[in-house]
Amino acid sequence: MHDSMENRRASIDEAHPTIDFGALLYRHIGSQGYHPAPRCHVIPAGRNFFHIQERASGRTLGFRRSHLEACALAQQLESSVPA
Image (cartoon, rainbow, N blue to C red; front, side, top):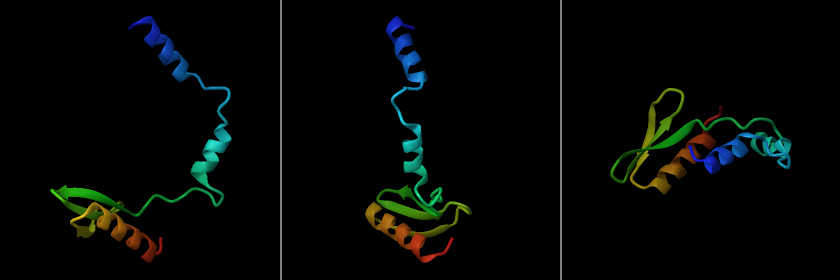
């Protein structure tokens, strides 16, 4: 490997002293604790066709022909069903 590449990799592997990891972690955790993983996700199922799938079971909960409409349906399903 070239010397400059080795130096670049070494600097990436080291933790940067000016990064406040506590603040970064707080942004990911939030003030109420860890955010739960989404229950549903949108999966491409063909040309201009998207399934809304439940993560735990893999069951298809719905489908739409537009990605934006599929995401809106996934958000609606997330908010309507208690965890």
